[in-house]
Image (cartoon, rainbow, N blue to C red; front, side):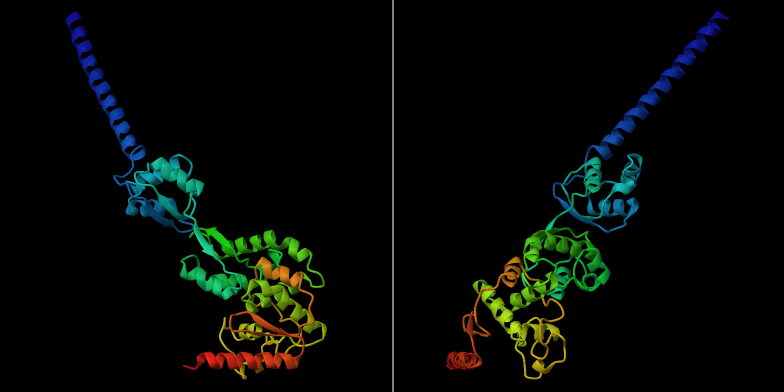
Length: 344
């Protein structure tokens, strides 16, 4: 009986040792798997650029990351994000993941929204359509989507734009934007920058209301190439309006025709567009471009002159005149100079 008990004890001890060994092996295996998947990144040293579309789920994100070589396994990524409570906090956008990044590092970067930022330049005097085409060409958002936001009066009202559309209020500047932003977010950035940069100028706009000031500044922006002439050109427009003369701005006619530049024919000058200031008195019905601060300041604070006309000279500057006869002579002199320079 005593020997039987000894045998049973020895048998139980062997089972315990086997069980303990199996348990230790499981712990070691689990630790190795965790170390492999969590604390070591894929064997690469190059950064990977991955674009995560808006509204992507963890499965789709994990698959993108695995294909790009950012994580070892899409399923492990998905379960880790869920178990750590971060699955719903992953942000869309374009990411540059460093080579060899661990799974926790990748998830932290997605949660923080540490996306790649690109510089996007809006030149002074660009129209909304030119901005839209540039956004599309540089891979940010389709031009039609951006123009739909520009022409949405509800957006204009929501963003405190004193007009039915956003033309004229998309501030020319250099922006840092990511590929994950949509047309609404990009337009809102530009409107916010406009309010930040122009508040003082619009408040001191003299006789003109904010919308009128932006309209006049947009015409100045498109007419003037030499910055030092902005306030002088502004004075010409003020003088013409004071005398109830039409502005006769070629830039407004071109805008009404849907063109950004080029010469005008006699037929063009007869176009019925409300933007044709050769036919219609006063300012055009809306801005014809997006002016910078300098043009807005010129519109708010014009030079004091008696000039009523200007014609562009050969070097891009203008010849200003106080009466029509002087203006005709300046035009003919410019034409003769152009003809002489064109002859071999």
